[in-house]
Image 1 (cartoon, helix red, strand yellow):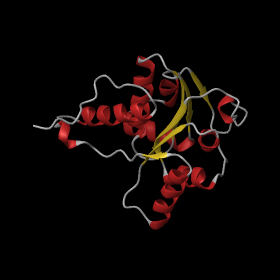
Image 2 (cartoon, rainbow, N blue to C red):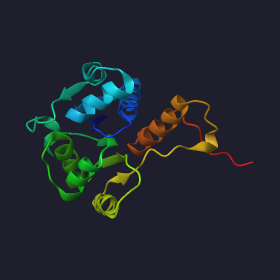
Image 3 (cartoon, helix red, strand yellow):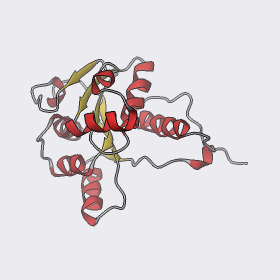
Image 4 (cartoon, rainbow, N blue to C red):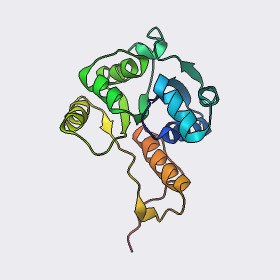
Length: 185
């Protein structure tokens, strides 16, 4: 399996990092793009350098590298997740504006009818945000804000992140082995 991962500048860089780790643990080939603000957010929120995150991926590209394989529909890709997905990145994807490689790779996923998961990160949401989410969803994207699942009775932030990342992996067609499931009494 081959998955692209975009990390934009929205808060929640840990979601993209943990997704890369989870995909790597399952032997998935990953193609990573980090936006300039994504690099800054990674450092601010995790203390990690962007190069350390790039090392988690099979391949990594610069955000302006529109010549990268993932910018073409002829490149065999099974899907993509943008985690986190800023409102700027969402707006680009929803309008088909391929100004950087994250938006272009997402656009390719939509036009080729491949899986695209957008971990949109903003609150509160304006009407423009909601309309962009609807537009992206109508085009085939899965809109998946990182909303915590409290039915799992998480004890740590790490457990909340793991649960969400497991759900993203399942949206991409992978089985998340350690995902806590709903249990009725």
